[in-house]
Length: 439
Image (tube, rainbow, N blue to C red):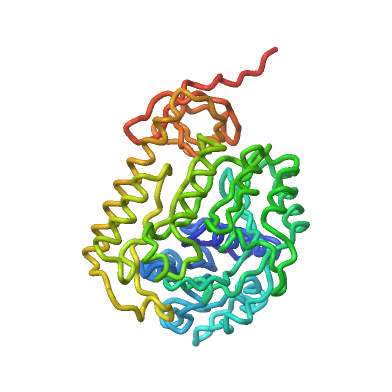
């Protein structure tokens, strides 16, 4: 029985796909093992959002060959689609598979027999037309369920359409079937993932369903306590969806909404499909209906043409907005994007200074959000995540809490009252009642 290990870089979508490919291997009689357990085969699922992700891939290959020098190493994921030839030259790589090939790697790699030349199986991205269903299982308390793939937007800084192809989706019926399968495994929370999740509903190039209707249907699935929307574009987060979540049985009050810039000038240069006024309106609508809702924001600093004044527009806009945390990305040049040809390049030192400013702002926003919720009672899904005798979990509105370890609470939902913020920045709770068998 050959042993196979997986390593995933990047987003929740990649985790859902790695997990699904892992199950394919197990069904074919392979033994799935940890990275350090001398595997015969390594499958590395890559990301290419930043230059740093490319370097990480090279480092992981090097570590894999240290652990198991005679192993077979296959690279899949976004980096593999964008730069297959470049990866094929990394010492130790046996195969590179693109977006259209990665779900067929067991049949394509012919028993994982090593040959002298690195196999490169990466068609043009136009060949990635089908939707491959995927979800993560047994990896953590929450499951990532892929409902959509690819993107038709073509923002000036983004390589995702080149790496994943055009927008395409699962069907509502198929997503519901997956959700029921997941429910049968005792998972309590499903996170819906995709590249542009709000664009759900395109099958074979035609819109046949809507994301809102998927949300309505999932809310009726028995056996899942929580659904969380991973990330949704502001122009696709409609009042209909916000209003539904506010009264939903299962969808939690947590929204992650990419902004990228708080300057309309920069948003237009980026080719985004909204202006800051719409973003402000979405935040206001959410907070009016769900005052305790958590709102996360993606923002890019140092985009070409972002002057000091335009950056301050972003900083001040975010500072005044009722949001909960930021994911800050330092702009990095990516080949074959419109942005790489633009003038107004921001020096790297300045990009890093701006990133630091926004990361400090994020910590302030998160702490303020946590402080505003102290004294309130929420439901926490506890995870098998223990540090210094404390276990951790998240409330429905994505506050990370710490409580005294109790093995009976792992993967359980418990009502707790938020008490204080500890030195690590997590919220201590008034201890949940211990679970005892009463006779």
